[in-house]
Every structure is written in structure tokens, then in C-alpha cells.
Length: 247
Image 1 (cartoon, rainbow, N blue to C red):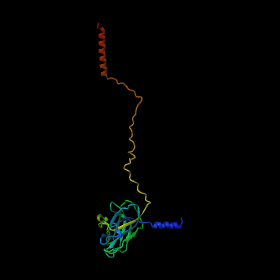
Image 2: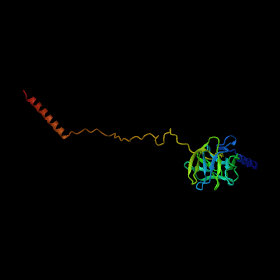
Image 3: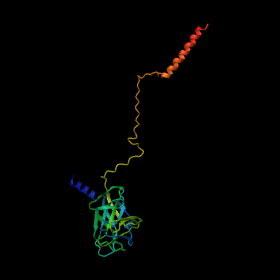
Image 4: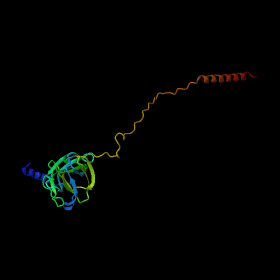
């Protein structure tokens, strides 16, 4: 393979267009500047606030965009994590964690949208629930600005690692990635209309043995029947003898 072709293939791989896996940003990346979710640091859970999302295809994580604000001066930053699902809540350690140490901006003002790029690019499977969580600074807090598109529902902790669901507006976020076509699709579910292999076989017939040489054997009269027959015969003979002697 020529050097020129190798460079072209590398550039093509580096410039693959990213798809939006999940986004609740408004038009032109708008969000609520004066409303948001308080994000703290929960020592018992990796994340303090998390939003569930379900990819429509198999993706490798590319980047995460969000808007967050400082409410206390001097907070050093936040962390973002991607989690697998564990019975309806973020499960254990993140698939990848991303740290943001740059100043976020004062709450109530228009802060720039923050973009963090994935390093390990974990695989996110289609139709599988995942969570994106945010963790605040130790002994501090930040505001995850909420969306203006009406997307609701997230989970948050109580400070002791216990998760609870909320129906309030989600923090604004966009998750991008590139489609991974190397993952084989899961096998299709069995067709309920097709008969099962075991039940589709014809029922087994009962085995019948026929003796072609069998002969019919006449029944033998019982002793009482023999005595009746002998008595009747004696009467008939006596009557015939009497008729013969009569002139």
C-alpha cells in the first residue's frame, strides 16, 4: 500500500462524521441560563446526577457537550461519566470518566457550551440503556443548566449513594459518537408463528402386533350346559322310541 493511500485512509478515519446519540439542546444550542440542577459530590456514588439515554445504533462514544455554571467562586471543576444501566440506575464505575477543570461561568449568565472528547471511546450498544452522570467538586457544587426543549426525567443521589428518580427538566446535554458496524447484530427473536421443532413432528403411532396365523377356537360349554343338553337328548330319544312302539 502506498504512503499516499495510507495517509488518505488515516485522514478519512479521523474525519468520520459524528452522529448525535442523544441531545436535548434547543435550536442553536440554546438552554436555560437561569434554571438548573444542583450537582454536588456524593462520596458513596460516583455521580450525583445522571440522565438515561438509549442509543438507536451501535456507537463508539465521541464527545459530550453540556452547559454548567458556577454558583460558588473557586470551585475547581466537575467530572462527567458514562455508565451502564443497573436496574434503572447508573451502575458502579463509569465506562469512561471525563474531567473538566476550566472555569464554567457564573450562574444566570450565558456560559459557553463545554465540549469534552472521549479518549477510550467505549462501545455503546443499540437499544441498551446507559446513563450520563455529573459529579460536582469535593466540598462544592455546580449548576447543570436545564434544557428548554421539555426533556424531563433524571436520577439523583441523596448524599449517601442512594438513587431516586425525578420528573423535573433534565440538564442540557448532547452525546455524539460514530457508528460501529463491526458489532454483529443480536440474533432475532424466535418467530412465534413458526412451529417448534419438537411440536412440529407428527404424533407417534401406537404399535399394534397382528398375528396372521391366529385361528378361531370354538368355545367349550360349561358342565351345567352339558347336563342340560344330555337331558334334552334323552327326552327326544324316549319320545321317538314311544312313537315307534305305538300301533
